[in-house]
Image (cartoon, rainbow, N blue to C red; front, side):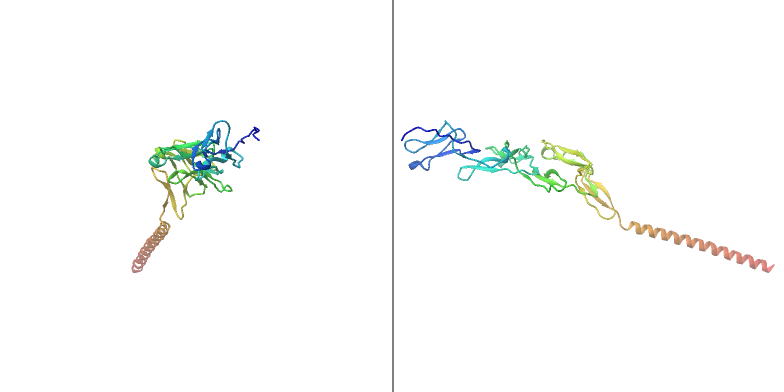
Length: 274
């Protein structure tokens, strides 16, 4: 009837970012941020981006703003990308392409990693990043995977025979070591990759399990513990040494007694002759 009516565009979590034409323009696509614009058409069916109200979008089921971020499907439509909670989170972002050796610190519990157009790493706030779930029925602390500071790792304190005595840094500080007795402490790194020793008497760090007779030694540079095996023949040689000493004493005593007996016999013969 041509009567005007109000169209109330609902608020969404994620919005579409393009507009598509219709009729003979149904393959024509233009950019349009529909969080503050809406799509329309001109008289020929070509798409328009109209900056009056919100446009189309989708809603994401969540309980926290950290639970998701907005992405796109392969065909460019809005998509909810969910970011679950983890026990431990990645703490650094790595660049890509020609920037794959560059890095920045990024707390994955409330940020996620991305990359700029040139491949430089970015730390994007608003949603969680990647991480790992640990067995929370056991005691654990968060660290990074061995040889890979970009990937979070669950560390479960164990009872070792010998404990490491130093902590090592990462990235620009990979040659930096600090003293850290890991029988009462554990290692981590700060946002610059510098090693830190967390003194927690209830949480121990890394070490090695030894068997048999051993003593603890550690590498002078890295502080990594090692088992120094003691010879298993040592007790045998001790026993043999004691036995040999006893035999020698017995022989000496026997020789002395025999000589004494011969001297007595000689004295008796001399007395009888007189």
